[in-house]
Length: 127
Image (cartoon, rainbow, N blue to C red):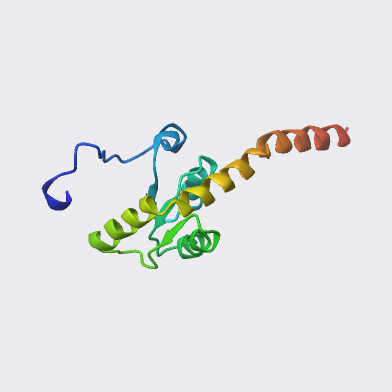
């Protein structure tokens, strides 16, 4: 563990069900995985992203571009860099405002309903 332990309000886990956690989160520090970032934005949660493999740098760049968080531009940020970024995201309301706006836009769409409708429609046309 870093620094001899975790603060009382921090939990470490191998798996975190984002759908259950993020409605209560003020922000998310992420490796920039697409699913985690999309889920955070679904709940209007701003981000600090540090990723270096697969599509993570691209996702992190989009987080920065969209104004929903900060891209640390490395997969191995220092604890100090993460701490400064977290403080900045929490202090500057613009990141939460943009994340909430994107979350509200996401809520206008029902992708699973659309997929089910398309599958049903395509299933009928095969008969």
